[in-house]
Image (tube, rainbow, N blue to C red):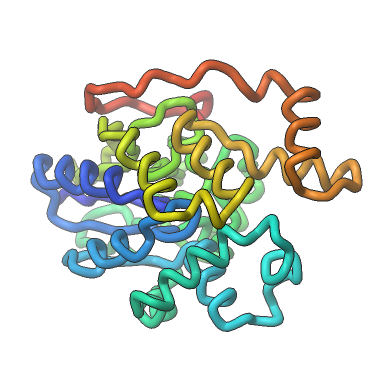
Amino acid sequence: MRIAVLSDVHGNRPALDATLADIEAHDVDRIIVNGDNVNRGPQGDEVMERVLALDADLTLGNHDDLMCRLADDDGAVPHDFRRRPFWEANRWCAQQLVASGHLGAIRDLAMTVEIALPDAPRVLVSHGSPRHFREGYGRFLTDETISEIVEMHPADVLVGSHTHRPLLRRWGRVTVLNSGAVGSPFNGDPRAQYLLLTLERGTWVPTFRRVAYDVGEALAAYEDSGYLAVGGLLARLFHDEVRDARSYLVPFQMWTEEHGLELGEATWERFRSVAPERFGPSPPWLTRSESVMAGPDSM
């Protein structure tokens, strides 16, 4: 039995196409698409068209949920996301999904997928953790948190995504895995990244795949679709995160909140000047697909 877990496509159709081709070449029995198919990138409607056509299990991610709330003008969404100009890129993506009619399918997505086979460890897959889709498995995951999660949601193998960085972590009998991101990795490697789980002699063996794809085609879609023109700074940050395989939005947002500043062009330039260590030459657009092992230091 072999299972593919892919996630965080974020409207990047070329990355998804390359990933699905790689999955097909690896004789996979089951596919789990683990949330955040949409937003950030401009091709969310095309991505949803592809994943809904698969014979796959899908879970709900935080960006999927945000698109539904924005489309509904949900009062539970912070005012910033609904009205402030900085967040126009999010609203643009939600409008595309409304026009394509895919929001109904997104609303019906499950929070978790369970893999329970005879004589095999129980696997529980969720976008973040089974407690919340924003609780990602990353480098700051503590033993206490793992203990709490498996007490509330018993499993032998926890598989999450959300942080855009692959992870392999063991705590006692529990294995914690992060699939990495297909559409926007944050580990310095721009290739599309996903997880294979193979059942061998009663044990789930993880393999982390990194798949080369045409990053230039993905970046061109930001301009060709009109997304960059409408989405402003936020769309540019999303574009550059795909190009550089680095996280820019979250540290920028945290920095502005810490200093009581507004999100905008002027503060972005200030952030770049005070945090130069976060920026550097873009990584090579690697042309070889490969399997790699990921551990606590590879996030």
